[in-house]
Length: 100
Image (cartoon, rainbow, N blue to C red; front, side, top):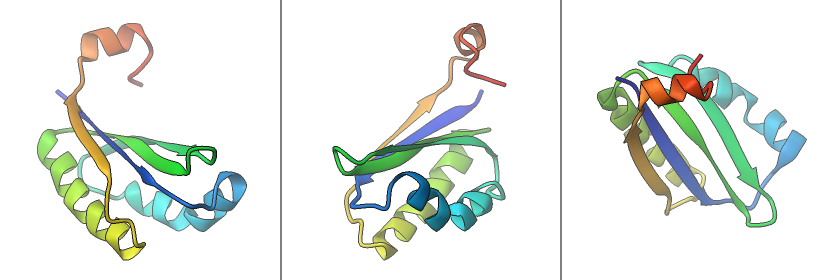
């Protein structure tokens, strides 16, 4: 059974292409995290929010990544984040192309 970690937080930018350039190395490093499967990056310049949905092989790896990432966010001056971890219903997700 896999798990999704959902994180979002207030973010002043950069957004769009500037965000892509700024965080490319971080994106590459996320691929090396234990149990990591994939991430969808999210952003809303209109609401000044950003975050992502991370897919992990198990809950323990999702929790460990979360601890590390919250520390990293604090280093960027982001003190508050909305965080949830969900178990993935793989059968239904396969029907809707949510797993690859």
